[in-house]
Image (cartoon, rainbow, N blue to C red; front, side, top):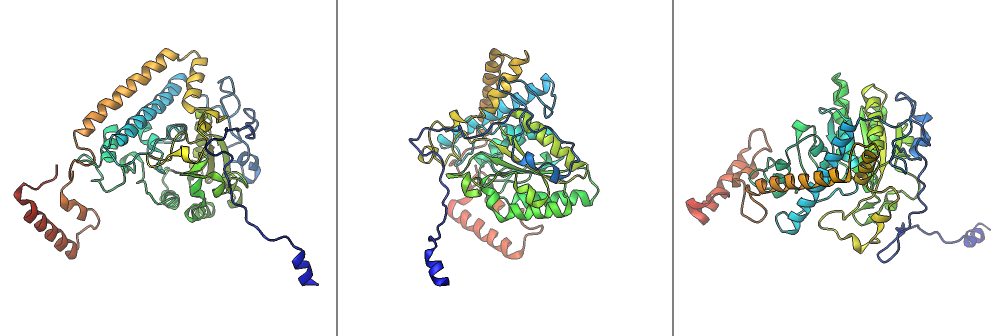
Length: 428
C-alpha cells in the first residue's frame, strides 16, 4: 500500500532561479511595489526588534515623486549639508569615470565603478563619526571620498606605482586606510562581516564610544561569514551596522540565487532577533536617515541593525565584466527608483538651493580636479612601466622580525638580480 502511494507522487524537482529579463528582452519593473513616503513611520531608536518586522519588508523613503522631502524619516538636513552630499556623489562619479577610462587605456589592470549606488557609501559615511570604523566591500570608494582621503593616494593604489602606500600588494581598488577608519578591502567575499563584529565587540568591551559599520552585496549574504557575524552580533548585542547593497546582481548571477525570490534581505534580521530596515537605496535622504537611526541605536547599546539598500548596479560588475551578455540593455533606465544623483539634484532645485547651471559647472570643475590629480599620480608610474618598489619589499611587513629563511631567500634573489642586471638594476 505504501509503495503504491509513493508511486502516485509526482517526481521531486528543484527550482533554479532565473532573472526576469535577458539580453534582447524589454525590462519591465511594474511588479516592484514602491510604497508611499512614510507608509512605515520612523520608530523610536530604542524599539524592540520584534515590534518593527514590517520595516524589513517595506521600503523606507523620504523623497517623494515630486522630489520633495516628506515624512517622519526626513532627516531635516540643511541646504549646505545637501549640497555637500551632492558634491561628494558627483566627485565619486567623476573619479569612477576617470579610473574606468584609465583601465581601458591599459594604465591599470582592474577597476570597479559604483554608478547608481553612490548614495549607499556617501550618505552613510556622512552619517557616521569620523572615527567609527568602516568595513567596506569593494564598491564603497565613496567612503574614502566622503572622508576626504586624498584622491592621489587612491590613484597610486590603483596604479600600484611607487607612491602606493600598500606597495603594490593589493588588487587595484582594494584600499586600506586605518587613519581614515577604512578597513582593508579583501577579495574574499564577506570576510569583513565577522571582522566588523569583532571590532565592535572590542570597542564595547573597552568601554569605547565608536561603532562599526560593514557593507556587502546581495550575493555575499549567501556566504557563511554573513550568518556567523549576525549570530555573534545578536548574542553579544554588538554595536555594529550590517548593510546589504542589493543591486540585483552578483556579477552575472541575479539576486534570486542569494534568496531574494523568497523574501527580502532585510528580513534575515528577524530570524536573529535584531532590527531590520529595507531602504530605497537611490534616495540619499532615506539612506542617510536609516543609517543615522541605526548608528544612534548602536551607540546607545540598543543593538545591531541590518539594513538592505534596494538599488541597482548601473553598469558592469567590473572592467572584466560585460553586462550586455546577461541582462537587458535598458534595465537601469527602467529602474523605478531612478538615479540617486539626479534625485538629490532635483530635490535641491525644488528647494530653490540649486540649478541646472550650477550642477553643470560643478560637474566640470570636479572632472577637472580628478584629471589634474590623475596626472600627478601618473608621475609615480602606471601599469607595465617596470617594477615600482624595491624588489626586497615583497619580504617585508609580514613578520615583526623577518625569519632567517626569508632573509636567505631575499639575499639570494637580490644576488640573482644583480648578476642578471648589474649595478644598473633598480626599480623605477
